[in-house]
Length: 285
Image (cartoon, rainbow, N blue to C red; front, side, top):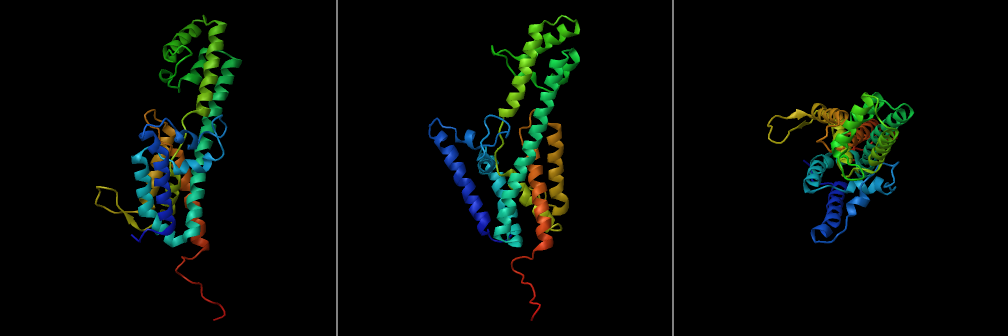
């Protein structure tokens, strides 16, 4: 592996400095949550601020999160930067981070609009079918009403009432309110943070620029070509993003968005630029 290159070195230092500034006050007993303001929220929500589009990819949830991202950048970044040059590498890193945020936000938009449409369908024609269409994919056990009670048994009771044709107008109206509350929760809920999208772009660029370079996974002594190994990781990300497992709080579509963006930029640079150490022949020589 070549020595750490200037842009990679600067990014490593900056990420660790931001991590320290954000989390040390809390460790020292100060009641301040900087991460809450710098993480990226859904652009259509009340908690979104434009600066979050940049600030979020210098944020990390914990030491494991930043360690994994920075190790990946440390091992792959210098090779890609050496091939592209400092300016192009920085461009790739930043645009991949924005591409990650874009696809993640687009997936959020899809989910929010889906539930908005389901809520509108229930309001237009309240029935057991339209009620179930909304709540079947919602973990109601993790939601509470204004009294702090879990919605799961309350929704279950309403389902029985609607099946028997005994649901009152107030119960139907309250159910619609809960639907709107859930949509608002999606709009202003869990933010995304971390350099994973940018690092995914660097990894994808590595696979494009050095497809036949063998890489090894920790504890597996067999080298695998980058052209095979790296796409498999992002295919797994895509599958997990579609499955949306309840125990999984990783922004998989951000990884995929960063990878797609990084790969496209690398394809373009691979066809239009020479490595910095190569000079074009002088046609007049």
